[in-house]
Length: 166
Image (cartoon, rainbow, N blue to C red; front, side, top):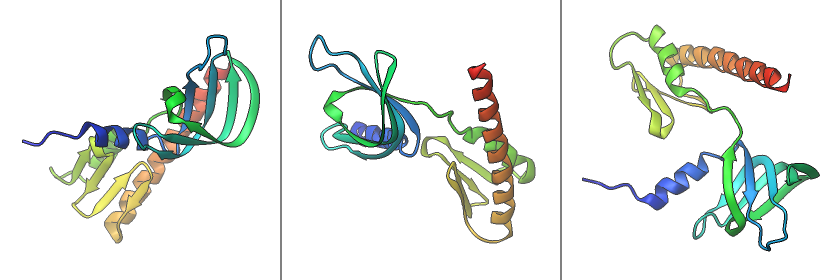
């Protein structure tokens, strides 16, 4: 029986935030300091001894919900991080697997590995939220389904964001 290493699980989870828009709350170091929040795209992490450092790009800095500054890039000391929240809508991998099952109907054609963020089609083509890996006619069909699904997903997210602004 194997037990998952909590440290590697933590690092894998934190790494899943890379490339996504996140909100980082920084812990106050003095009692009179106001709460600082950084919102930006997480581009890098250095998880030495916990979080270490994180790097955000296209950052908006807020103090007590008031926007104070914008920065192109910022490094944040992991010891000061209180919370990190992903702002992006998660990619619906199970729903994509169901879409693929409509085309590839035999049992076992589509295998969903949700923990790994992976779909395997006909044991040859890999699909993640980043795209399709593989060559040949099967990969081309999977890529067409993936692109259609991604377009519909992005339109739904955009529509939800517009409704939220109103």
